[in-house]
Amino acid sequence: MSSRTCFILGLVCLLLAQALASGVLVAKREALVPNRDVYGALEPGEFAGTLMLGGFRGLACDLLWMRAQNAKEHGYYYESVALADSISTIQPRFEQIWEYMAWDMAYNIAHEVEDEGGQWAWFLAGLEVNVRGVMRNPQGERLVRHLAWMFHHKGDEFRTRIETTAWAPLINPVLGLINAETPADRRIELLPPGPGLGNYEISERLYMAAIRAAEANHLRVLPFVRRMVPIAIERDGNRLRNRGEHLRALGRYVTSLRTWQELLEWNRKAAFGQDTRQDREIATDIAQHNEGHLLRKTELLAMELAEVPALASQVVADIHARRYDAVERELKGPGWRASVAQAKVRWLDEQ
Figure 1 (cartoon, rainbow, N blue to C red):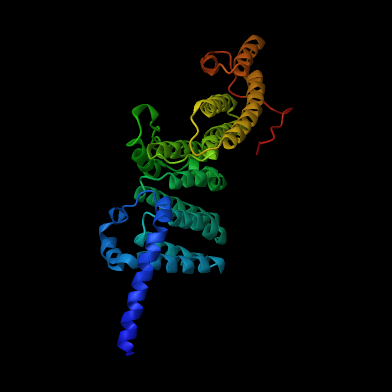
Figure 2: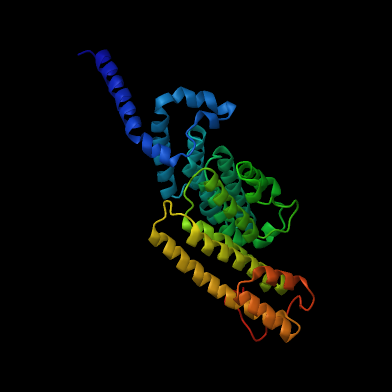
C-alpha cells in the first residue's frame, strides 16, 4: 500500500472518528451550552477563522483546554488565560471558559500580584471578562450567577474601591439584557449612575438577575441562589451597622427578612421541578435558621434605636409577627435615633 493511500485512509478515519464523536457528545454539549447558535455568537473578526475549523472546532478546543489546564497547574496563569481566550473565540457559547478566565484573573493572577492596586486591576479585568461572557451567552444564567459571587466574595476585599467606583456602565447592560426577557413587574432595578454602592448591594441585584434569567429560559435555579439574595441584603446591613449607620442597617435587615419570608412561601407553594422533596426541605431548614438569627438581631437593634419603650415594643411585636409593611411604615416615622453607642454589645459579625 502506497504512502498516499495510507494518508488518505488515515484522513478518512480521522473524519469518521470526528463525526462519531460529535454524534455521541451532542446531547452533552447541548446541556453545557444553553444557546446552541455558536456562529450567531461570533463577532465579524472571529467568524472566518472559526468557520475554517469546521468539524475540528471541538477537537481544537479540547487541545487548547488541556494546554490551559496544564499551564494553570504549573502556575503559568497568564498563559492559561491567553489559551482560554482562544477557546472563547472559537466557542463563545461555552460558558465555562468565560467563568474560567474571570476566575483566573480575579483570583489566581490577582493573588500573584503583591501590590493592592495590581490586585484591584486584575479583579476588574475578571469582572469585565465575566460581563463579556454574559453578553455573548444571553440565554444562560451561570455567568450572571458567577458575576454575583465575584462581587459578593472577592469584592469584599475591595469594599472602599467598589464604593468609590461607578458600576452602572459595566453592570446595567447585563441587567438590561435580562430585563428585556422579563415581565415588567419582575424586572431588576438598574444601578444608579455614579459611585456609592457596596459590593453586597451589587451582588444582590445580580443574584436576582440570575434567577430572572433562569426563569425566562426555563433553566433550573439552584436552591442556594435564592438564598443568596437575602444573605447579601443582610450583609449590606452589617456594612452599614458597622459604620454606625444603624437606622439604615435596620431598614436593610427588614428588607432581608421580607425576602426570607418570600423564599419560604415560594418553597411551600412552588411546584417541584428538578428539585426533589429533600432539596426543598433542606432549603427550607436553612432559610428558617437564617431567618431566625436575623429576627433576633433585628429586634435587638430596633429596641436600641427606638427613643421610647412603647415604640420599641410595637415594632418588635410587628417584627416577630412578620408584619413587615407595618415595620417599614413605623421606621419612616419619628422617634428613631440614627445611631447608638454599642459599647456593651459586640456583634459577632462586626469588623
